[in-house]
Amino acid sequence: MTLHTHAFPPEHLRASVSTALPLRDQPWEALSGGRVNRLWRVGDTVVKLFQPNGESPLFPNDRQAETLALEALAGTGLAPILTAQGPDWVAYRYVPGAIWRKDPRLVARTLTALHQRANLKLPAFRKAANGSAALLAQAEAIAALCNAKLPPPPQDPGIPPGPARLIHGDAVPGNMIEAEDRLTLIDWQCPALGDATEDLATFLSPAMQWLYRGRVLDAADTASFLDACPRPTADRYRHLAQLYHWRMAAHCLWKAEQGDADYATALTLELAAL
Figure 1 (cartoon, rainbow, N blue to C red):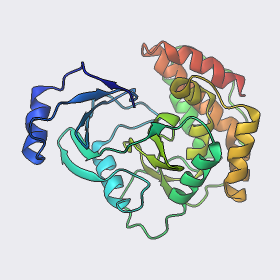
Figure 2: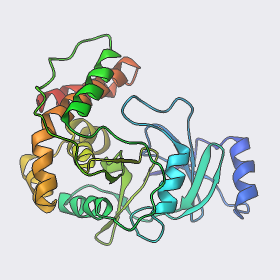
Figure 3: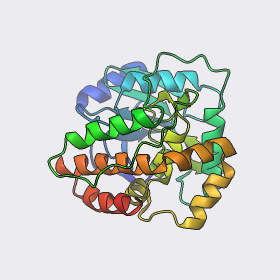
Figure 4: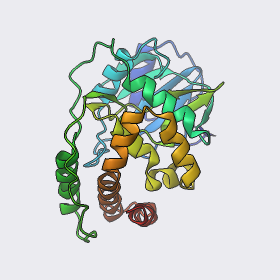
């Protein structure tokens, strides 16, 4: 994350956080990287302020869900350590490191470790679209919210729902902090119980790679990532990939029509994958 000294926090946030945590007079340094919510580093603490109306039809923005996810993953190293929460904010231990840039195998191993957590006491997270029929229905519902039209969607390949696992729900490069050959996943406002391939699709999305990393994954990186995933999960993703690309294209079109200009380029990249 890149530090900035402007973008001061609202007074109500400073007061609420200071009541919950002994931050003393440490400076609040704005963190860049998030595209929806606002974040500051205060000493060894990160404070995240949730923005109203920050959700999209594909990506929720749920403070309570993030709190529950951090609590469920405490001690796993897969998520930051929750330290406090308020009505529109959460605070967690700062994770040193840099945003992920290379070695897709490390991402594959981290997501696999998350998806294979079988001993978690999971709260009632939302249920993500699972199976090709549900994916197609969700994608068409997003596309129906847009004024412009996309190319026709891919045909339903008839893939049944898979096992429901804990997924991050927003597994983009900007939400992965790398340090000493390990990743910590941050920004847990979109967790769900769903198909593990959902996280694979978000990470591999050309649109998301370009928005957060400035370039898409090449064929070798994509192959390296999928080879490092469990074979059944990778094979299942390959059968669903075209539906995931079309759904992401619908999301990018919706975002572009909401005024996020960079999503127009992201849309072009996602359509090129079809």
